[in-house]
Amino acid sequence: MPRFIRHPKDFWTGVIYLFFGIAAIVVARDYPMGTAGRMGPAYFPTVLGGLLALIGAAALVRSFLRDGEKIGAFAVRNLVIVLGAVVLFGVLIRGAGLAPAIIVLTFVSSLASAKFHWRSAALLCAALTLFCYLVFVKLLRLPIPMIGPWFGA
Image 1 (tube, rainbow, N blue to C red):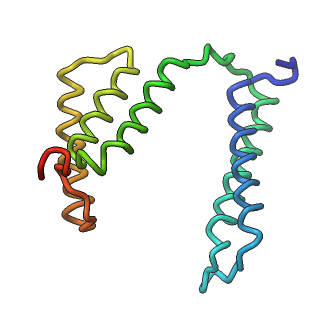
Image 2 (cartoon, one colour):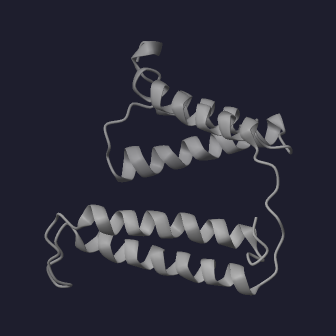
Image 3 (cartoon, rainbow, N blue to C red):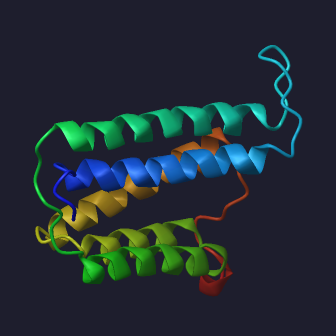
């Protein structure tokens, strides 16, 4: 890392935010913008992308002005565990239902933590399952079965 970059975490955060902010603006160019009163399909991604790019630019400038810690080792194992949990959720949601998919997602992704405990993971499973049931099934009335056809429901 060059010496003029004093805070590597802010530098890379700024680069990532700038990239996604500018990408959102570029993608939204092909859609009609509209006005603040009658927003078109490009309005939200353009405004959000612009704000994201501004935050990225601020982080990038700050990385040259403020001292900070170096970037640590990349946690590949934990990344694979969390991404695998999300993929499992996507595979299980249709066939197994919402409750088993949330339980698998929570337990598998909890394994990525160095502070993993079965009891706290089980409590989190119960809380997340109840929360998702209330929000998605009851309040939003989404047609997601709690127990899917793989279990005979």
